[in-house]
Length: 545
Image 1: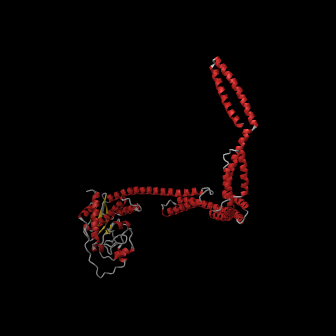
Image 2 (image 1 turned 120 degrees about the horizontal axis):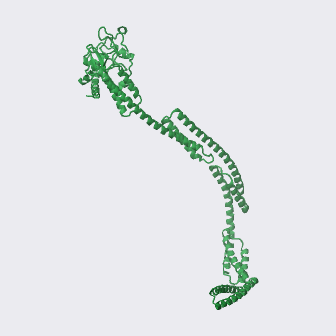
Image 3 (image 1 turned 90 degrees about the horizontal axis):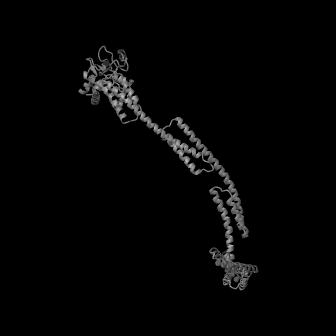
């Protein structure tokens, strides 16, 4: 059986003995336990002539031992003094010297209990546990227990009045308690639990083993503690690496918040979208507060530096925003003043009946309105509504007056539409003189008919203008045909062409007589071209005559 297997068997046996011992009133009566988990001092020496020594720790659970202190409290001492039973005493390697008989004599005596229970026999460890403990310790006849480590014996303590097995089992259970704490710590390391206080627990267990006040395989326990130190160190490195990664991510996220705030603050105040940017800056501030409250700590230097940058960006942004809106208010006031003036003029014109003049003035006011600076959307909309209302009053009145006039001009429209029918009957122009005479009669009656409604004015005027254009075009064509200069130029051209054609015919005859094909071809082409021109001129001359 290996040392590790023996240690595990010892741990299991110790756990069973602990349960049995906790249920045994004799052991509770024989050894009082203080708040730190130590056995208090007995009320009287264990044997005549011997000084009473400090009692050793009993078996407790692994969780309790890990949290326990090694110091003894005054309350535990008082409780131990009142305990009439015998208890084991530690050897000379105990944490502090045993009190002298004079010290015990000076202490107040406990009042006898009316019904003190009789001491019961102490629970005995199992045979396997005792066999394992016997490998590392021995018991003398007077109850003194010794520990052997690397061939060297160390006095552990004394448990008089009990058998050797019981005395050895008591100090073996103390070692089992330490082993139980080691097992618990190994489990925590194996499950990668947080390493907080793990090294402190290892140190505490080493100190317990260094007291040599228990019996067991000390070297095996120390080797397991050495292995734990290495494992805890590796676990701490992993925890640190993970923490550093989380911290780096948090630092990057915080840097991103600051960088975006600085980027927003660095925009040109004249071009920034203040509503969107203000909302985003507020979101960044909320993100900062959330990170500050629930994020990983970055260290005072990092957090202070980032906060100073973030605060500076927000300060610049707020200063630009206030300056922008202050200037905007100033511009808004100036724009309102300009447009208020235009509204005043528009309202003064709204009751005018000088339709032509007032309409021109409204066009001027509209041009000035478009050229004037804009106020805020709310103010500009309200000002425009007032300006448009003044225009609407004027144009509504003018439309009403025009409608009344149009009703009066309706009869004139009927007359002019009949004149248009008569004028269109002159088309196409066949007799220019008759057409001109008829058109003049139509014009005279057109003027006598008077005005027509505004909506029909353009249509009827365009209809008459079409007939007038047709008569004018016919007159121009007639002039071209009867122009003497044109006729003279045409006759001269005809004479020249006829002479040229006669010459080309002679050239053609000579070329044919000579048999020169090249000259024959050139003469024919030239003659054909001149003859075509002659035919065209003859047609023009016939049209002019």
